[in-house]
Image (cartoon, rainbow, N blue to C red):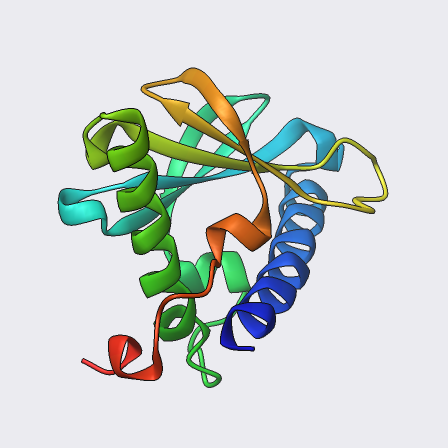
Length: 144
């Protein structure tokens, strides 16, 4: 149930972010992407991309489009994303720091959002939101 909540909220947030960045930059939603990058120990950090080229690093609040995350969405999403980066690292036998997960849309209306995993910019595999937010984390894992 926790993963379903995280999946639905993340899809909604990513869709809104792609549309917002598109409007701010005067480009089609298909021309901008978000990147979840693996850091030390799989800790995620984020980048904005324009036409598949990194432009700048983002905070989670930048993606949300808020100054302060009153709903604590970052606290909910981060353990799932870190877990996904570590699982992908283990499955593909690559360092977590070499993993990126691109978030993009293929339509100007941003009807759907897709994910694709990369190893230092080389395609690995498509990723589903369900895989990203796979069950297995418990509430105790989210409380630090």
